[in-house]
Structure formats: structure tokens, C-alpha cells
Length: 292
Image 1 (cartoon, rainbow, N blue to C red):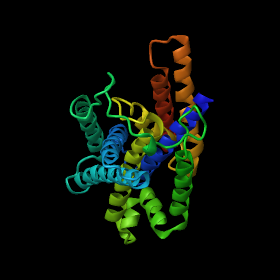
Image 2: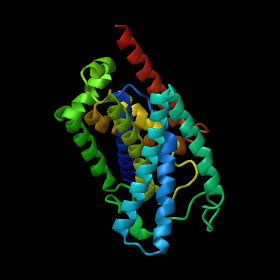
Image 3: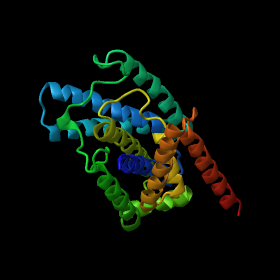
Image 4: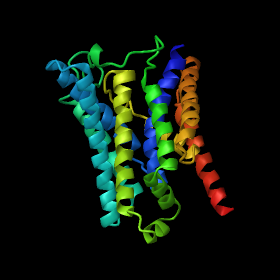
């Protein structure tokens, strides 16, 4: 029961971060900042919630403010990457990857230094108080109501892209940016808004991981989350509804491969190997589809 609930809680994180990756892919951009953004979202949420606990802010307002701050930070970082892409001719894929590579050691240093918990030997921020934690709906696992939020966001994004004028413009831009430009679409607004939302969704996924699963931001909690979310988005071929089953599939593979490695005493990370195989299969499949 624990592993089943853990699998679904990770699937929720993959769905939300995968939506961020999907929005970037919709506009022909690949956001490789997922790992760093998830780490940043978790760190910001953990630090703010620890601060709010000291001044006794009610749970609803504390969690809302922490999530808004995390989302704003992620959006700002990706808007910067899009600005460099749009006006300085920088490659979005490269700038997003560099952003992630800069964020991770910075947060590692902050966690190892001024924001490290004073209790225990774990490289982590202080644990958030019980009132700020998402309640488990399947004990003893960390599964919480975030799974319903993630599924709802996937369905809402599907209807937005299919049933609204702005969503149709995003779809058309992804098919042909030149056609969208000649049709008078606000291409700059499309690319900047999707980049900002992509960053915000990734950092929100990190905040959910801290509030619902780990209850602290410990060093390297983010590992493989960003890549798994990108894998699910690529498997779903940028269809938000398909993110639901594919996120669950990736989560099943990662959760139970880790369980198998633990009980079989393997000294290497089977999950990372499986993740590499998934990305290889997806990329080669895309190549052959383009060739045809």
C-alpha cells in the first residue's frame, strides 16, 4: 500500500511538471530546466513555510503565499530564458539547461549553509510543521489530494487548448510559426506566456513534493523528477489528457524499479537506466516519424 500511494503521489508531480514541459513543446521549445525548477520550487516553499510557522500565519494563507512565490520564481526564470531567445538569439534549450545547472549548486550551497536544519545530520531545510503538510489519503503512503489537482489541471489544459481561441492559437503556432505570424497572431505573447507557465508549473510541482511527500527540502530530492516529467510529456506527444496515463506509467516504472533494486541489493540506479531507455525510444521514434 505504501508503494502504491508513493507511485500515485509521484505521478501527480510528473503530471504538473509534465504540463509545464508540454506547454514548451507546444511552441517548439524544449525546457531542460525541469530539475532545477523543481528544486527551486521546493526550496522556496520550504523556506517560506518555515518562516510563516514562526509568525503563526494560518495554513491556508501560508501555503497559498508559498506556492505563489514558487510559481513566480519559476515564471521569472523561464521568461528570462525566453527573452534571451527572442531578443538575443540565444537557444532556449541551451539557456534553460544552463539555468538549471546554475540553480542546483546554488541551492545546494544554501541548504548546506545558512538554511540547513539545526537538528539531525541531513542536508536539508527544517521540516515544515504538521499544519502546513498535505494530509495523506492513503496511509502510510504520502498520497494526498494533489493527485486530483494534477488530473484536473491536465483535463482543464486539454479543454483550453481545444476549445478556446487562445488555445487554438498556441496549437497553430506549434504547427507553423510562420503561418501564425502571417495570420496576425500575437506570437510574442504566445511564446512568453507558455514559457512563464512552464516555469511556474515546474516550481509548483517542487512545492507539492515538499508539502505532500518529503516535508523538507533536502539535497537532491529533485533528482530525475524533471527528466521523468519531460519523458511523460514526450510520450504523450504534447496531449495533456494523455499525460495522466503516461505519468502513472513512468511513476510505476521508477517506483517499482527502485523497490526491486532495494530488495535485490543492486549497487546501481536501475531507474536512471530505464529513464535513459525511455528517452532514447521516444527520441528515435520521433526521428523515424519525421523521416517518413
